[in-house]
Length: 193
Image 1 (cartoon, rainbow, N blue to C red):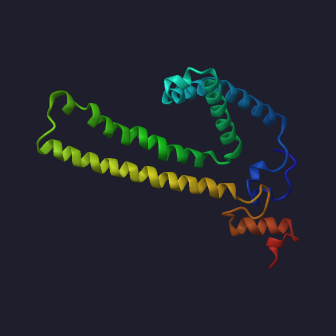
Image 2: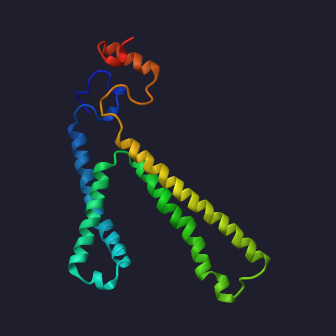
C-alpha cells in the first residue's frame, strides 16, 4: 500500500488504508481469476448436491436447474462480498458442518447400518455401555454445534457493525500506540487530554 497517512498503524483495519500498489492490483486480479476457476468446480458440485435434495420431477425441469445454479452463485457472491473476516466465517462452517460430518452423522449411521444390524448383537452390557457413550458423544456434538453456531453468528454480526476503516482508535490499541498516534495528530478528538 502507498499514500498511507501518518499513524495509519493505529487505525481500524490499517492494512486497508492508502491506495494499493500495482503489485497488489495484479495480485488481486490473480486471486479473482483463481476464485473464478475454483467456482467452475465448486458451484457444479454444490448444485448437484442441492438438486439431489429436491424431488426428481422438479429437477427434470430446466427452469429449476437454472434457478438452483443462479441461487448458489448468488449466495457465494453475497458471502464473498459481505463477509469481512473469513476466520469468523470459518468458525461458522466448523461449528455447523464439521461437527455434523465428524461427530453426529457417524454416530447416527452406526445405529442405522452398524454391525449390530448385520449380526443381531444389539443386546448385552457392552452394547448398552456403547449406546451410553454414543449418547454422550451425540449430546456433546449437538451442544457444540448449537452454541458454536450461535457464537459464530454473533461474531459475524459484531464484525458487520465494526468501526470504519481508517478510524481511530482501533480496538485493542495499546496506550503506547495511542500516544504515538496522538503525537502525530494533535487535533484528533480522541487525543484530547
